[in-house]
Amino acid sequence: MRPFLSFLLILFISISISAQEKADSSFNIQLFSGLDFYSTEINGEQLKPIARPSIGFSLERKTKSSFTYALGVQYFRRAARYSPSVRLEEAGLELIAGPRYRTGDFAFFVNGVYSTATTRAFENRTESDYYSSRPELSPYSAIRIQIGAEVNLMPQISLFVNRSIVLDGNNSYVNQFGIKYTFGNSSRTPTYRRIRINAAQRQIMELSEGLLLVRLKNPEASIEVMRKAGRSDKADKLERKIDEQNQLVRSAFASEYNFSKVYFFFSQHSDSVRKGKLDGILYDENFNLIRNTDSLEGLNIFTAEFGEVGQDTLRYYDSESYGHGETAFSNKSSTRYYGGTKASFNAIVISDQEFNQLSRPFPYYSRWLKPTFKQHPEVLVVGCVLVSPLILFLNHKLEISVRRLNDRLTKYYNRQSK
Image (tube, rainbow, N blue to C red):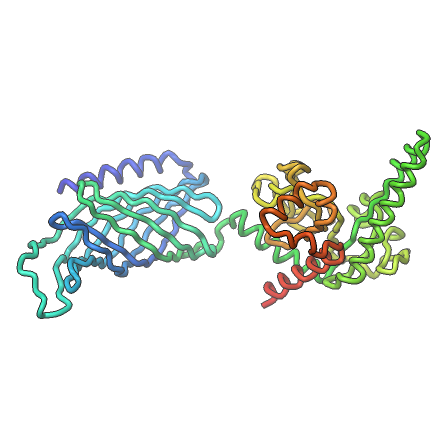
């Protein structure tokens, strides 16, 4: 009776916490099944766990906050090895209750568990090995604390893992791994991870049938300022450098990119691209000016350019800075580049029509190592020491980078088309 009263106390505290949440809530019915690995101590000896199945259902109360509350019942069978030929077998019911915290596709929970073993006995695997000295067993009730985590695979399917321990000091525990199905959960608001995956799938289909407009640099203003300041030699050097780089970009995309239609435009026409006014600003692969773009009207527009991608861009995802743009789900925050140029690398980067850089899992960039090594020679030194001296002999041409980008886009498209 005492364990049951303790469980009621835990249940009362959990419900009291849940009752403080906003009144606007709903419920989910969940069916779960798993494997239990049970171990307990008998006569000072810790029994080795044996996998046994369990099944149950629960009712989860959802609120507007990240906290939910669940109440469930499960039937379990558990076993532990007493000796090479003797097993301890148990079966019973458990009442499970407690809060959980959800963040994205993950949930973390702490439950109170009222466990009742209705049958409990030793079983022999062989008749010849019988332990007359085995202790007598009887049904029992106990309070356990269960700590675990859950990850969503789909809106209705999730995997979970947990560990529960007995509170009475007995060295007994249960490790559980299982799968859960939630009824009526298909309309649940998708997580940011799911939104990002769905957006990437949509983007790759749109790009395959749309336009990739490659932005070329045109620093006319800077060159004009240099000339007026009497620094014509530096202006000429900058102009030659930019022309050579633009020619490299045009040549690389013309020879290595075929995933979608590709055109080129100069940076001073960026605002026209953003507004979809393309007449007289686009060039084809042979660098012929396209004066009339009526045939391109209505196609989804993506942009690409040679630039820098911050290292932290690849590791952090700020949910508050993401949203739906006109053409793509992308990062609209100007503070995306947490790492700055010091920890960045050069790449061909794909953005949406608003020039917002796309995000994973879309293959939105391909590194171009040569300019990175020129700007940051320490990267080359570290690469030779930690990776391999062969990095010196790798082909760092822009054509290789564009070819790699084209291959990644094609592979990702093929995976989504299956």
